[in-house]
Amino acid sequence: MPRLPAVHVLLDAPACQGLIADYGREQTVDALRALLDELRAALRAGAEAGVSVDGIVALLGMRLAAANVSRLRPVFNLTGTVLHTNLGRALLPDVAVQAVVEALRWPMNLEWDIETGKRGDRDDLVEEQLRALTGAEAVTVVNNNAAAVLLMLNALAPGREVIVSRGELVEIGGAFRIPDIMARAGATLREVGTTNRTHLKDYEEYAGENTALLLKVHASNYTITGFTKEVSVAELAPLSRERGIPIAVDLGSGTLVDLERYGLPHETTVKETIAAGADLVTFSGDKLLGGPQCGIIAGRADLIATIKKNPLKRALRVSKLTLAALEPVLNLYRAPDLLPQRLTTLRLLTRPAAEMRALASQLAAPLQEALGDSYTVLDAPMNSQIGSGALPVELLPSHGLGVRARAGVRGNPLGLLERRLRALPRPVIGRIADDTLWLDLRCLQDDHVAAFADQLALLGETPAP
Ligand SMILES: *Cc1c(COP(=O)(O)O)cnc(C)c1O
Image (cartoon, rainbow, N blue to C red):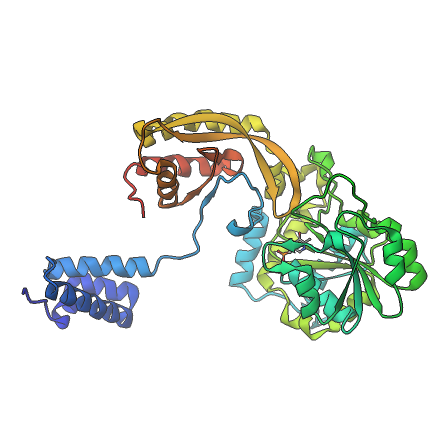
């Protein structure tokens, strides 16, 4: 059995000294010992393994590099879902990116009032602008919309009942179910109506002494069609006033502008919801709003004050990075006419299909060349979705590439292709439907096209993992 070089011999090799300079002595020595153990075991088992100093150090370098690669990596989202929860939802505009970089590098007046030199409140940084955009008296910001709903219920309805229509007892993305959040918040769910039809009299019957809130939940990721009836916020408002029970609305996406003016389908805005009579509205920052992950509660000043005193508010608070990103995004809304150019999410949602068509005709031939004879690339119209539960049945006309396996190719060629795309330095994520792998080009931004095209050449060589 060949003998392995001694540890000190390996460590003294100049290439290994370079690794120590990059990765530190402890990490390098630990990785080296682990590598030598493996090589020893492999040799004992009769394997042929190189045992030269250079060979072992080169292997060590690869191990250390692999261990230090970031697991959170940029990818190409060609799924056609613009706000893809698993791919991190909204992409932020450069003004927000720059603000986050500053906030990472500098101390900030996060909870410190520069004018008075006294302690401040982090919500103050965005409150004025959010009030203007929503018509609410007050706002508070927490980690995400699920946190906003939990906090609101725990602050306003512990030990009391919250009325929700059976048609609105939704599950959003597996872990967020209204009945579960309600239980965790210490409130009792009072379901009223039926799945397809709920009437005002259903709310009237149960709204009493022990009712803390009338809660409405945006159905987000599903729609009920046919013989249906939902009680709107405006229809609930007189009952709410008469019995002194606030209306809370979990709006999900929280649109701040009328999307129709940009040619998109109408989604009820936060302002409309408050104007219709909602006392509190909760919504996400990283869905249609186009900002960082956060949950915003907007509404009546007295209710927001109670919410802010709840200890969960402290546990669910947002970081300075979130607020650094949120403020410039909200400021973009001061120029609604320029929003489709400036707010990345809106730019992607309103991107004309002609742009995607041009990209498809530019990229079809290079992709075909990279894939070789086993596949056929077609340039095809398709539909994108907004995603994250916003307008789930509305589709946006788009264009992209479809890849099919040529007849007679054995095995699972599409599965193999999907793995090869994922194995690229910047993984490409599409979707498989109807025996075709679809790459929707809506979210391939102009300044990312070159990076996308450059790595196509690697597609042929990339080993499937
Ligand atoms: C998305 C959504 C949530 C969850 O929001 P997060 O910001 O992901 O926590 C809650 N309610 C509704 C109606 C939603 O659409």
